[in-house]
Amino acid sequence: MTARIAAAGLLLILASPAAFAANEVYVELLWSPTPADAIARSVAYQFVADGLHDHRICVAAGGDDADVGGLALTIRDANGVSISQVRHDGFRGRKTCFPADIGTAGAAGMWTVDALLGDGRTGRAEVRVDHRLEESPLYLRHDGPYVAGRPNYDASIAPAEWVGKLVWAMDVDAAGKVTHVEVETAEGVGERLRERALAAGWLTRFGPDPARAQTPLRWRRTLEFAPD
Image (tube, rainbow, N blue to C red; front, side, top):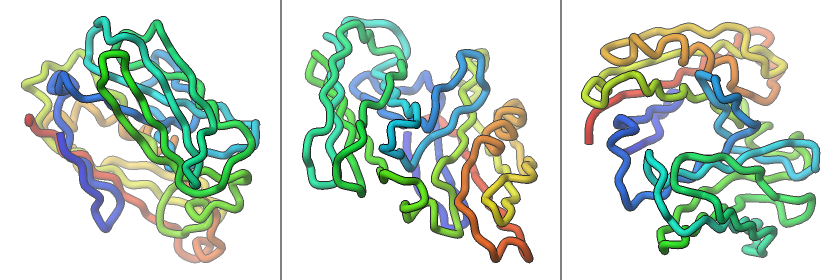
């Protein structure tokens, strides 16, 4: 599956979860834990190392349980210094989310999260980390979020049906609050994901911008689904 950034909001081209390649290790970072029955999740571009946030690291190495030899998670700060190394011997490959052990020290900037399976496969993700959210350039930017809501997959949809398009838009006020979410386009499988897109919109977080008092920000996100 492939992904690319579009100038207006975010455009992702995704395949069905069933198309997940056997040799891939997927690492995703969440702003906060996702309830088991949630239809959307809060994907983080930003972590805050102040000891007050319950950020999560999610790892998947296939859709079914398998003997992958456990999992080791290593987090390094912007200078490459190791912040934590945690083993999860019970990890079996199915997507699982773990607490992000980022501590309260380390150099601010882009941090790396490395996932190493016992069978030798690896995955990596990067995230901006600051000690105060108000110091983050992602929080201070005016044209995009530091946390982007993402619809959860619907396992009841057959793999062959993951074809279509989904576009939803958010209005954001001067304080950074999402005040309105609407689906602009829903084609194919996108029609069945409407409620998930709306839920994702409300999970999206933006920093403040006084200029939005006159003109609220409208930020769009697009998902296009296609088989590999």
